[in-house]
Amino acid sequence: MLKLYNTLSRAKEEFRPLHDKTVKLYACGPTVYNYAHIGNLRTYIFEDILVRALKYNGFDVKHVMNITDVGHLTDDADMGEDKIEAEARIEKKSAWEIAEFYTGAFKNDMRDLNIREPNIWAKATDHIPEQIALVQTLMDKGYTYETSDGIYFDTTKLDEYGKLAQLEKQELKAGARVEMGEKRNQHDFALWKFSDPKETRQMEWDAPFGSAQGKSARKGFPGWHIECSAMAMKYLGEQFDIHCGGIDLIPVHHTNEIAQSESATGKKPWVSFWVHGEFLLVDAGPSASSPSASSGSRMGKSEGNFITLQTLKDRGYSPLAYRYFVLQAHYRQQLAFSWEALDAAAQGLKRIKLRVQEIPPHTPENPHLEQEFLDTVNDDLNTPAAIALLWEAIKDHSVNLETVIKFDKILGLNLREVEQEAPIEIPVDVQKLLDERAEARKNEDWVESDRLREEIARLGFTVEDTEEGPHVTRNT
Image (cartoon, rainbow, N blue to C red; front, side):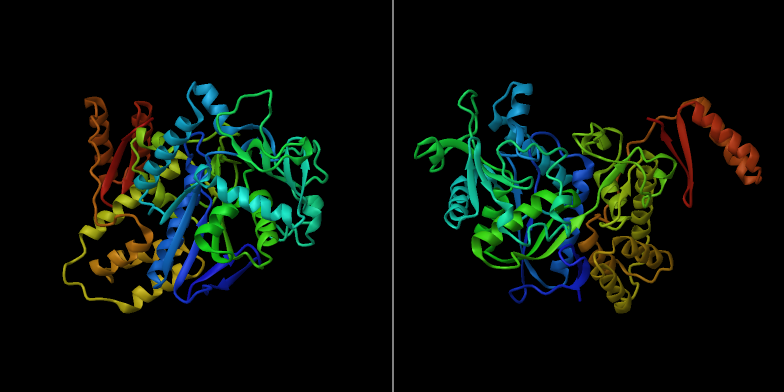
């Protein structure tokens, strides 16, 4: 039986869908003003594992992911400029072109990482009428007020505001800095923003709001949070099973989604299970060679320390090596990224695939092993333990190819495919040192072996000793 850690209860719970064998799942997708970085992509990998595990357990999954292509401002406290319009100005393109380009780039990353596409891609700009209708419902029910720059949700109307984050209201943070403006309360948030008549916006729509200005309609655009509530309810209903996202979305975005959705429908809980993935860290120092390290800083575009999947590919790494790297840590555990750790993961995945190729064709089935693997995954998606179990089974020849294929339905590592590496050109002087080092190791002269390794490193190459022999890579 699948158990998941529910952020709402802060406990692992047995998962049971609202409707028998059908699971309705919503995942917060990217804001498409730039490339997704590998920290973002870690979240989508864990969500892919969740969807695969649900299907492996016999559930039908209706999976919706949004694309935020309007309304996400540079400050999460409803201040600043729309991120997509800002990028359009920088790149001298239209906001629509920016959104289309980076949406395509994101989908390419998904394919490269073997992440299955959702059943429904839901773009915010394709659902403006639904968002306007939801804002109107909240206005009619008395949950809003109007300022000169928009329609805001009044969080004092809810006793349970902030229940997902389990923090007192004074502890909740509406972005890095909170600018009150005309907001009545610090945590109130914009449902609809009015366009500034002094500025030209590329993305704006007429809406029947703006009574304070004596107009029946005024151009504007939706706030960041309203899109997810409107689109989730359109495709999944007023209550559904699972909502996913990164841990950074808990205190603001997901908290506000719950507030506006439950206020609009009067039904609680809006979502049964909230499942969140932890941060990817960078610049983690000496401990970064361990995937479970927790030092370093969060990867992010605003922090200026982000790495894209294309960067990994340019340095010769397979996207699936990054997927394997991610799966070596639990999704609720912070993960420290370093090139050394990624290189170790790449070599580990290569060795697994080579071992799979060596599995004898008539190895008998092992139902106990298959059940143990499923039980491990069903324990809150424990991929590190599942991979350890796979390694153990391959090493002691207790698994057949059919079982490995079943495991891979969840892991998504394409374990039957051996990746062809482009051969590197090793200079004659480096090859001579490699031969000398091989002879030193044969004679168990470890001091000389280490000296030669250091000399090889000074010439721009790294030697890793594996069970299959020395593996040589060019330093980058």
